[in-house]
Image 1 (cartoon, rainbow, N blue to C red):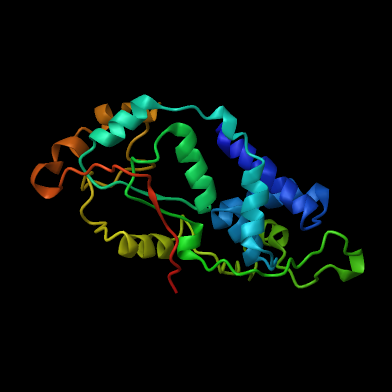
Image 2 (tube, rainbow, N blue to C red; image 1 turned 180 degrees about the vertical axis):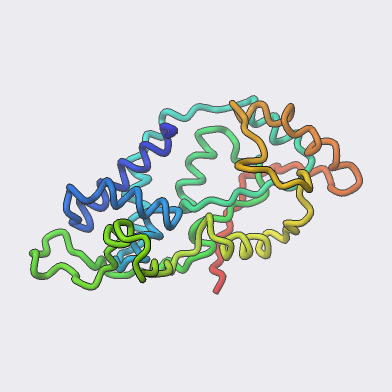
Length: 239
C-alpha cells in the first residue's frame, strides 16, 4: 500500500468513527470491504445506506492529508509538457483535492482539464444519516450488512448498487469518454490481451522509456498542445 493510500484509509476510518458513529471494532474491516466492492469508501457507504454530505466527507478526509509532503516534480512536468497529445485527469476525488495536489507538484498547467467527483455526481447537501450524538436506539437500522454478505458468498444476497458514479465502474468511464471527447478504441497498446496489467513502472519518470509510442504516434494524428494557464477544472454535472 502506498503512503497516499494509507493516509486516505486512515482519514476515511476517522470519518466513519467520528461522523457516522460506526462501532470502532467494525470500522477497519468495513472500510476495506467498501473499497474492495465499490472502489471508494464514499461510494460504498452510500451504497449500504448511509446518507451524508459528500462535500463534508471530502473536506474531512482530504483536509487531514499531509500535502506538505508533496514537492515540485520538474522531471514529471517536463515529460508531460513534451507529450504531444491531450492530457486529462480523471479522479474520484473532489476538485479541491486535485487542484491542491497539482499545485504542490507544480503541474497546474500540464493538463487540459480535470474531471472530478463533482463532474459525475450532483453534490447534494444531504443530511448525515447517523448523527454523532445519536443514541443507540436512534441509529439507522436499515443498512445493508456487508459483513454478512462477505461471510456468506454463496447465499442469495446481492450487493446494492451505489448511487455514486466513480472508478472503476464502466458507467464512469463511459461518461468521461463523452465529456472529454475521447475514443477509447484509439489508445496506444497491443491487440493481445495481457493477464494482470499492461505495464508496471517503478516510477512515472520511466513512462517515456516504457511507452515511447505515445511520443511517436502523435505526429499526424494529434496536434502539439501547450497550456499557458492554470488547468481548468470541469465541474458540470452530467445527469
